Image (cartoon, rainbow, N blue to C red):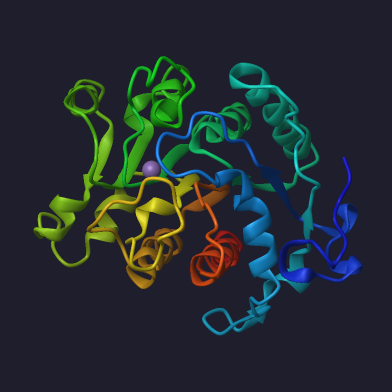
Length: 298
Ligand SMILES: [Mn+2]
């Protein structure tokens, strides 16, 4: 595998802070787009994030440090899916994540459509059998299949619970699903925090605590950017109203740190950059760096 130089890598890091051997973190690009149902463009998500990341500050005032210069962040060249789709494409990504986990790297995967999350989740679950999944999304992605495909982005988590215990899956921000998904959630005891329940005050003001309470000590995060409100995140294929703002999202990560739970890896998916609108790309790049700050908080 090849790794990108400072012209192209995450945060535009100098070689000493971004070469493979010096880096604790590896960023994988999975520009996979096969089943997108509404807006297109998630194949440009990883490059949009990397371009925007050049404008993210190294210094984080909340932690009073420049994390990237302490741990190193390598960015791999994009995975070349050629004409591979579904299981074959996922297998390619799975093997890359697995190889990096075996090298004891902290792996961040950038999508691409949500389907790709299946691969890093599988690889992390093999290394961390006690992990929970924290899934940020407007959609529960639990359809058995969608438009004839088992590997549609709308079925990503139906495929995850084919191998992962459903009661260890926590979903937050959900505000669009079909009745079969709602029934599956109840039947399989998936922890789903609906946006409407959060907004109606079912969990009170400190709803983030309830989300984190549902998780085990090791947490894998799958973050679909359509979790955010379309006002701050218009650049995604299936935006939904009544989403979340940036700071209330960070409160979930702060609660993870407070409860001394550990983020063991994550993916960020479904950014579809729009020409001339830069703030969603920058928001996503900052989110990723911020999540790394929380993952390496202790
Ligand atoms: Mn979604």
